Length: 183
Image 1: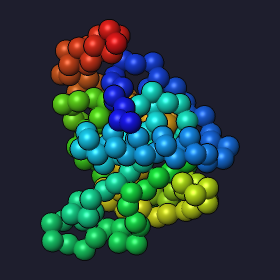
Image 2: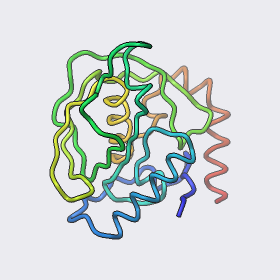
Image 3: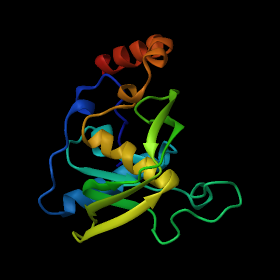
Image 4: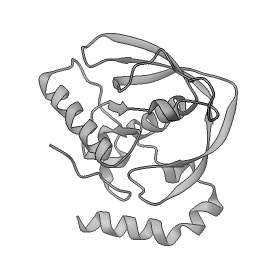
């Protein structure tokens, strides 16, 4: 079952995710549906709130060709198999180096903005088998992890925008909010 992606203005996007006590068959079905939804929207990550659920779950799949710092360079995360399914994820360490890069979000279709993020993070989570994991992520994967964990905390792309960017996108943001309210 493919979900409709919830867009800016929907109250569920501001709800802090509830921890998952144990991974059940229902959670695994939710993962499958979220993956299908993410792939259908051509995204690299999706948090449960973006499909109207309030559980601490996100899925990420960074394509091999995007897992590089520069074209033709070595992979940033060669030892991390994709897709990454994370229940109850939390960042346990952030690298000191940061970078501002353009980001988009499936809940903000057509909108991109520069966001300052750590270049490396260490994330702890429970995988789809219920096994605790800890991974050190770099590059686009680190950015995707931080973006999806923002969603699980009710933090949105608009919250990371500069005041000038918010003003320049005011019309688009208002349209998204109104469309969301009509649903």
